[in-house]
Length: 182
Image (cartoon, rainbow, N blue to C red; front, side, top):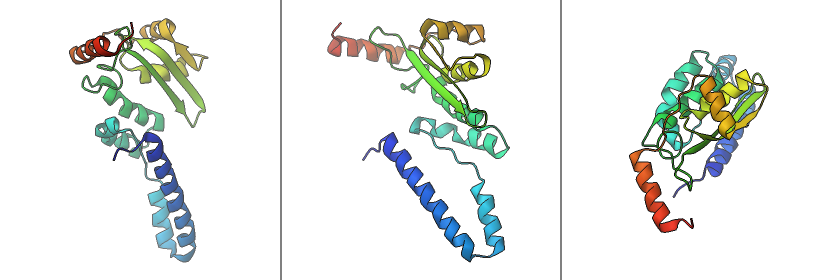
């Protein structure tokens, strides 16, 4: 039975709250050494990703374990699917729009600095997650869209490239033939 992202996150959050609550009660009843062990375990990094990010979690976990930034670790995970031509959800090989063009959106937020950046409707740029972070770091904006976002990305050193692979092009042509009203 497939589980939705919303159900997964809700269950994970409920489980985290339950574990945290249980830890508070048990901490009052256990030895000081056990309390120190629990506090140390509570500081271990936790990473949650969609299924297409699973193969990229180890590198991000190492980054966090070595004291790296949480947003840098999250962006590491997201870049995997963005760079994978076989992942049809984002980036290279993503599903195109009605016109046969891959358009991408991304946003990121950095908790410690309370800053955010996002991009929407970006064409020809593979790693829009990194572009959204560049918006956060190098502009006074929270969001750039369309051609302006693409120009910004190129100005920041991102390469323009076709994101449509042979496979995604063939699937789009089949969809266009059978489902499109255009």
